[in-house]
Length: 253
Ligand code: PEP
Image (cartoon, rainbow, N blue to C red; front, side, top):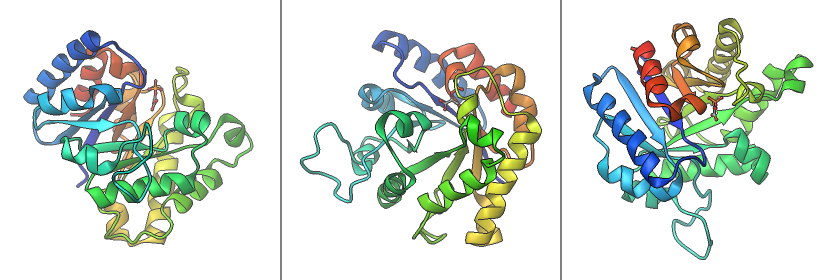
């Protein structure tokens, strides 16, 4: 049985006092939640230490990115390592978000290195993949996502990937208000699971959590989360509103 994961990506939003207030609301909801669900938030990097020290064990803290270098320390201005995250109690790192791909030129090769850095430091990588609109309209979405996953996971064996979480995020649905239909999301999640079955073992593929991301909101969360291969959500906009994020957590329960 895969445990659902509801994950909020705050991106570059909220000044400290605003972030603290949102954190307080979510931390309280998480404290009251039972063990059947994992909850995670990814605040902006400057707030990670603060919230990692304040969060209850029911609320996981995530970075929105991490260095993919082999070294865990060194002369790499502006970067921070998975080992540093781990040392502060940060449990997850989002890697390969489409905004990192678009604005920072990240590729599945560089993202694969970030996955490796996370796994080495015992940080859970939340690996994001997903096609752009033109690729979907050209009917190439399965091929695109398959290539992304194969490239990012190249060279790992299934034992090394035991912590892996995948997030399918069709780029055309991120922050646009357009959501993949339940069927569109489910068929891609199933395709990713089948791909993992082919690359590794059925047992491994059955255990990997695959989140959906792209305009998930209280209004559509329950139906998406009901799909057999959707194991949670990676939520941007709606994770910035305590009531909306809480409603999605409720839907997941
Ligand atoms: C995201 O940024 O990962 C995301 C899914 O954003 P939104 O929920 O706003 O579409």
